[in-house]
Image (cartoon, rainbow, N blue to C red; front, top):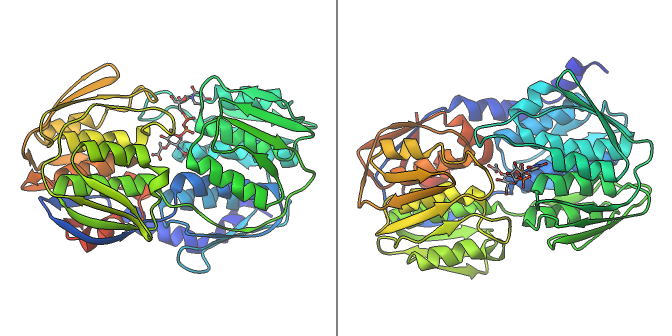
Length: 438
Ligand code: EPU
C-alpha cells in the first residue's frame, strides 16, 4: 500500500489536531481563587511509548484514557505511514490495528516534529530485524543525543549505519545482554526494553530510569505476553519471548498536567480536586509544594489541594525520578516569581532549559540565571505582557505565572502547549481562571 493511502486512514485523529493547532494564542488575566474539579488526562509520555509498542504484535489494540493532544496525533501519523490504522472510536479511546506487514521506517518530517518518535527504533528492530529512522536533532532544551539508546541496542546485537540523516539499523537476531546505562535516560530505557521483550534470552537493564511511565509501559508489555520484572526500579530484567499479542490498556494519569494545575492553584489560591491524578506518582512535588505553604493530600478520587496564602520561596533541584522532574522546573520558576523570598532552581538534566526565563522577565519577574541555576526573587505581582511559549512545559508555566500578573498577558506560540495539554484553556476556565484562546 502506498504511503499516501495509509495517511488517508488517519482522518479522524488528524481532524482533532488541526483544531488544536489553530489556537495559537492564549490571553490570561489575573485570577483566583480557583475552585472545583479538574479531570486529569492520560499521560503523554506514557501513551506515546505504548503506541510505539503496538509495532511488536499484529492485531487490534485498544487504549483508554488517551489525551487528545497534538503529540498523540503525530505519533498516530507515524504509525499510519508505517502501515497501521489508527482511529478514535470514542473520546479518550484509541484503536490501533495492523496486520504485521509494516514499513519499518520513521521519516524525518515526523521525527523532527516529535523527538519521542525515536522510540519506534527498539520495537521495529525487535520485530522486523531492521529499521530506518531519521536522526532527531537538538531542540529548544539544547542538544539531545541518543547515544545511550544506540549503545544499549548494540549490546543486544544491533548494528547501525548513518547515511543522509537516517539511522539504518539491523539485527538478524537480538540476544539478551546486560545493558548498563550511563545515566537513567527515560528514552534509552524504553528503547532497550521494547527491543529486549522479543530478544533471545535474558536482558538486564541496570541504572534504568524509574519513571511511572516506564512501569506503565512494562505493565502493557506484560499484558501482551512479555516477561518484564522490576520496572519502576533501577534494575529491569526482561526474559525474551517468541511472540506477543495485542491488548486493551488504560493509560496512567499525566503527572505533569496534574503538577501544572497544582502550580496554578499555588499562584492563584483556592481549592481543587484533581480527579484521577496519582499522588504516589508525584509525592516529591507535593512535598515541595507543602514546604511552600500549600496543603495537598491523596483523595479517593485523585488529589485534593488548597492554597490560602502567598507561597514561600524554596530551593529546587531537578533529578531523574523519584527526584523532582525537569518537567516541573518551569512551574517552580513561575511559582517562585511571585512567592515570598528568594529561591534557587538548579537544572540537572537539560542544559538549555531556561529559555522561558527571558519571557518571565518581560512580565516583570526578577530572575537571574547562571549556568544551570536560576535565582528567583519573588515579587507580589507581575505585569501582563505579550510573551512566547518556547516549549510545552514552559508555555504552560507562562500561563500559570500570568494568573498573578496585573493586566493581560498574551502567550503566543500556544501550539506548543497543545502538544501536551488536553483542553488546557477549557479546564482552566472551568475552575474560574480568566483565560481564553484568541
Ligand atoms: N541523554 C543522553 N544520551 C541519550 C539519551 C539521553 O545524553 O542517549 C541525556 C539527555 O540529553 C538529557 C538526559 O540524558 O540530558 C535525560 O534525557 P532522557 O533520555 O531521560 O529524556 P527523554 O526520554 O528524551 C523524556 C520525556 C521528557 C522529560 C525527560 C526527563 C518523553 C517523550 N519525554 O525525554 O518530557 O523531560 O524524559 O524526564 O517521554 C515533555 O514532556 O515536555 C518532555 C520534554
